[in-house]
Image (cartoon, rainbow, N blue to C red):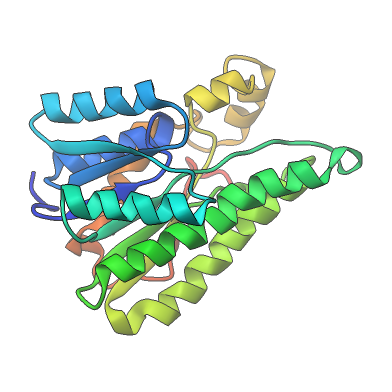
Amino acid sequence: MSKLLNKVAVVTGASKGIGAGIAKSLAAEGASVVVNYASSKEGAKKVVADIVAAGGKAVAVQANVANATDVDRLFAETQAAFGAVDILVNNAGVYEFGAIEAITEEHFHRQFNTNVLGLLLVTQGAVKSIGDRGGSIINISSTVTSITPPESAVYTASKGAVDSITKVLAKELGARKIRVNAINPGMVETEGAITAGFIGGDFQKQIESQVPLGRIGQPDDISPIAVFLASDDSGWLTGEILVASGGLR
């Protein structure tokens, strides 16, 4: 239980859902974890409390990933708490579906600012902190990039950008011993998915009917993959897009 002993990890959007699960799993393997959140302070505090209660190390740091000043502070507070970063999980993201007629500038910028610009800004900060010591960057994308559901043009485009950025940065940062990979989850039961009405109704049944393994995912289906990508077990992997969807394509 020490694959990540003495490592420092930053997980964005880690106050709930997939991010919270990943933060807890990284901590369980020995990493000191910065639980980033945008607005859910209580959620982030609970994740930190759970990690500490299990014998791990964690702190919560508020930062809007799409704001460069906030990102600078995120890494300054990470350095003060635990030192230089070894692992970054770009999990912070938002989604909002809508038909082509409903797309507005606000709809577009809300998703691209967090899902793409935010990922780039946080990655900049992580690369600076990692330096030439080497590390692992894990981007949380989505299976929407392959299944391309109707009324998801903006969201799917933002995650398509994440997939492309992953492959570009894997080549760009490889010489610095920084590996860059992505996890593309299918439908996962999270607080956000419940709030959006995706869970417990006909939509869930429709998705499950198409999933070869016959069910939607849970955060615990994703977090072990993040641990794998963060650890030396995946030391020869970079630029990979790992689809975690129960077989849905």
